[in-house]
Length: 221
Image (cartoon, rainbow, N blue to C red; front, side, top):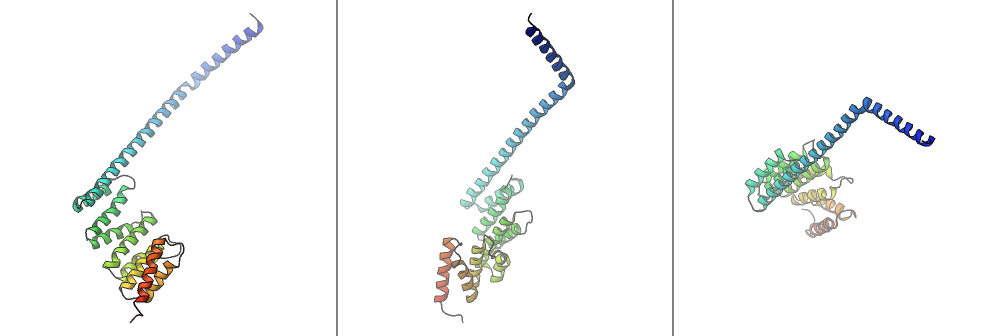
């Protein structure tokens, strides 16, 4: 046997002895770690499956409620949305609350719809952007079914230059002001929209039309 072969055999035996020593010392730990990894992976996969299943079920329930509302089955749609609000997953309970208010409004139950939107707007657990949208939706209903004060109570805080809903909020206030004969207030609000290049094109066109209508109607009495 050559010296090189002998050295290789000795090194191999040393490595085997070291591996056996390491296994005796850390084998149980290695097995425990491997089992933990497998269990954690299984738990994650199971959780993701559970989340996806609940989300799919809530999505299906929401679609069914929308279909009922489109078919004119208001009572059944509202019942389905109420169930989804209580038992839904993810964003669907909040979507159900907002849609239920919309269904009420479409059914002519304006007071109940406004109360539903107000409830969302007053819920501190909901994101500010959604609460602001609920305020705007309530205000738009109150343009026809309430007073300028009612509309202002919901959206006056949304008319600041930094608020993304300012254009729609100003439009709602302008319409409410015009309805109550507050000509100058209405003109000022519509001019804000028409003169703002960042306002959506459709809102600017409506504001320009309202300005023409108001000016064409003559001076205030």
